[in-house]
Image (cartoon, rainbow, N blue to C red; front, side):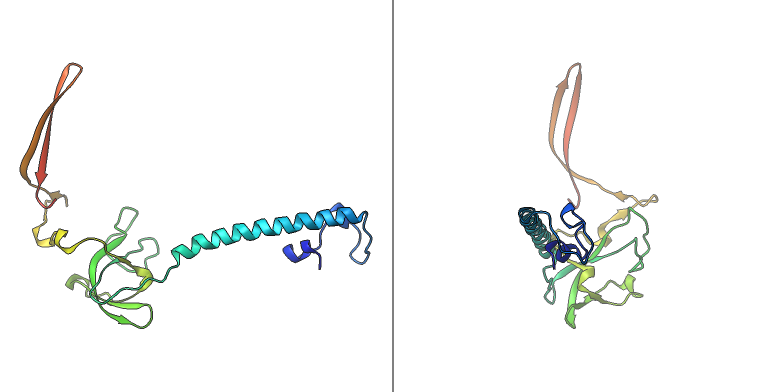
Amino acid sequence: MAPFEALYGRKCRTPVCWLEAGEKQFVDPEIVQETTDKVKGIRERLKAAQDLQKSYADKKRRPIEFQVRDGVMLKVSPWKGIIPFEKHGRLSSRFLGPFKILARVGFQDYRLELQPEMDGIHNTFHVCHLCKCLAEEESMIPLSEIRVDDNNRCVQEPEAILEKKSKMLRHKKILKVKVQWKHE
C-alpha cells in the first residue's frame, strides 16, 4: 500500500500516479522517492500535532476523587436541563453549594448532604456534576444572616470607616472613603 493510501484511505492522485489503478508505470524513481519522503514528513508532523492535542486533553481527563466529608459544589446545567432548579437562563448560577459528601456510591458516584429545600432531588450524583469547593467554612456567611429587600437585592450595612482621603483632579476635589462592610 502506498503511504498516501495508508494515510488517507484512498489512491494518490498526484501527477506521479495519474495512471489507471492497474498500471504500475512511474515517470522517474527520484520523484517517487521524493514523494515518499514528503509523505513521511507529513505523517510525522500530523503525529506530533495529534500527540500535542492528546496531551492537552489528558490534562483535563485526570480522574477526580473526593473523600467523605469533603466540601463539593454541585454543577447546574441551565442549558441542558439535567438538574431542575428554579433559576433558568444565561445569568443563572453554574454551581450550587457547598455540600458535604456523605458516602461514596460505586466507582464514580457520591451521595451528598443536601439542604431541606432540595427534597425533590435525589442525593446521589456522578463525579462529572461535582467540583471541589475551595472556600473555607469559616469564611462562609450563613443564609439566616443575609437580608434581602423587596427587589431581591442584598442589603449590606457598613461596619466601620477605615480611611478617608481627598484627591485633587484639575478643579475638583474628590473625597474617597474606605468602608468595611458586614460579612466581607
